[in-house]
Length: 126
Image (cartoon, rainbow, N blue to C red; front, top):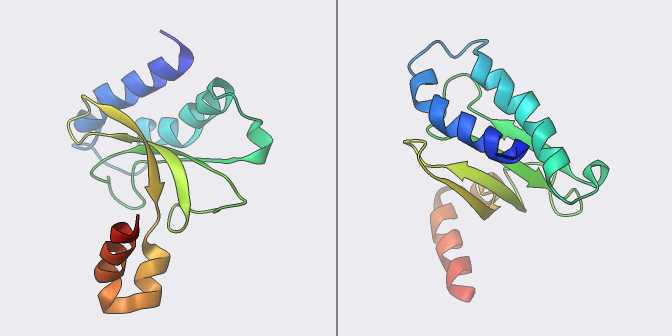
């Protein structure tokens, strides 16, 4: 397996059991946020200094799914706004998907209660 394959396999195979353990200072959380990101940087055919790489398993508790994202700072610097490439894992850890994602927190803030209607309208325009 290549370095990136090993990273994706490790996260997918260990995440569901890790979520049953204490979140604070968990080794898999550290792995996703640091070692996995370094491997992703070296695996992609991009000038890593021109992109932002982020990984997450949650902030104060385990998220449903872990992710590894590649952000172009000309488009966004955060996963809450803009669009970005992201590896998303299935909840059971058996599948991983490379997706083009759109952050919706900025839309939620701008449109308050009607944010889901706005997203639906934008999707219909495509």
